[in-house]
Image (cartoon, rainbow, N blue to C red; front, top):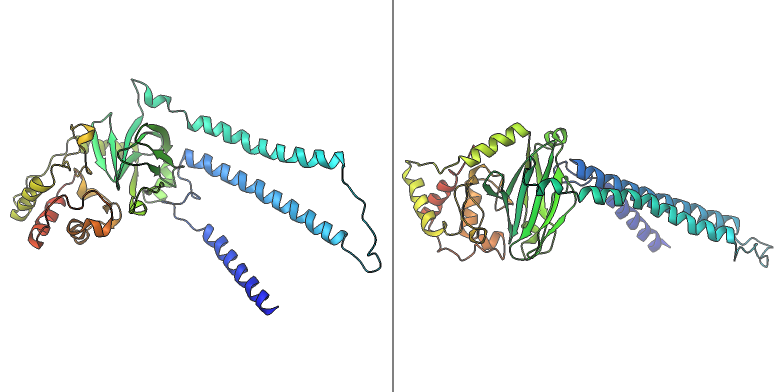
Length: 354
């Protein structure tokens, strides 16, 4: 009996902790704190489906307790058989109709929202006034191209708030999945077709989240799948337009620092074949083998996961395989000395549009 009691206490404790932790979340990452139109619709469906499940469980539990209490075997009535309801048309109609009604209640908004969220006609118009982003997923990084502005960046997605942002999703190697939890549901990026959808970022809620949201790959794609993160900067439209202009006019700064110039020489010798250093990149898509570094110094993270500082950059350049196993950068350039690491780091930290 004591062992049973211990197990029951453990189960109760774990259940309470799971319920408590399920309510935890940050506004930049949690699906339970929606940050825009798409997330709001999906959140409402989550609440509706949860409410239906809770009601069904509550009703079944009440009926179960009533039957157990009302028809329990009593002393002196061991041979008494309760009234049988087998073949009752009334009951059969009730427990057939009720599930149908519940399914209809859930199905109607689900179907309506599905068609509403699938409407991407504005992005396919020749004359369009919406922001379109071409997302290309790679092992293990993200490229973001703004075709209407002629600019390309990597790892940090910048979007305007208060309007729909449309996405073309594609993968360059294996299947990935594009997901910004606070903004909306995930969608696959495939190698053989382009998926399309839109997201919105509410201005007030973006401000509450510090204007920064986290994005993830939600499809198991290799050993560094869990490290395939990106960041989303949600800016007011005026600030977004300013960022676009800075990106369009960005050029590498000609530094007089001999260490920076040495780093530039190392970069041009070992890195330029895969990385571009200006956001306006006219090379064909198949030639973009690695993230565009035109605004590298302005990014939130190094390699998508490390705090943005010189020490972490040196660690990444020295041994990228240790940080992101299976990445395509490993082994593509000769080992760098401490002096070369210092110089290359200094040069990369000058690549800014701000």
